[in-house]
Length: 293
Image (cartoon, rainbow, N blue to C red):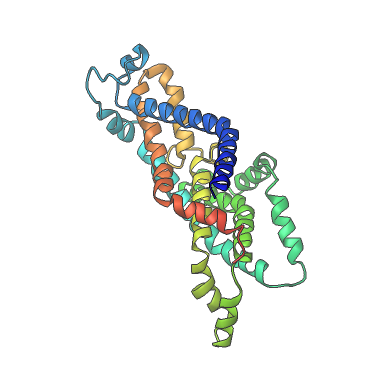
């Protein structure tokens, strides 16, 4: 027994030794990320003078909470923030309503064209947005709605939904495919119709996958830049990505770098909070798609 334990310890030691370079690289990356984020947060509470003098963490002039108030109120961050929040929330909700039933049908029912539709979604995921933006812009411009705020918002939401439909459908399709069919068979024995089975049983069971893909979609829409640049032609409908880019350009004239970092922190918070509170759901959703139920 002692010899077997010695052999196991030696094997474990060799395995840990082989993994040591990976641990070192990962630790350095985590350290760099924390230092970088900490510096940005520290700069948001400092002044522009302290930022350029290297005194970000000294707070010699105190903690400047007014940077956040100024960024929120005077730099239109509140407008950009609410716009992106509306776009991301509505788009994510519509994506689940559209893609969840489609993914369930494609994963559970065999019919003519099933594989063709699936392959079409996969192929659509490889089409870059730059290939379709000009035809879309020409179409929307022909409707003369680019100068109407409400219509402009609706166009952006429609585009965000359309672009993310293939990815969302394929993600949920994989998740539904790995759920056990025993629940549907039991529901069928009890006389439950297929659609009611989906809404009452299968959709709640797919909650980890739905939460995961919703978080990914939220982050994609929240950080989206290209479509908003093309279709949002006024400050009333611009997203946070476009707003931050405009603020960075204005820094050359105003020099309010502390306010800019405060705006960066404000924009970063929603996705950070989502990940912190739902990280377990994300891991369960990603791993759940690869484990047969």
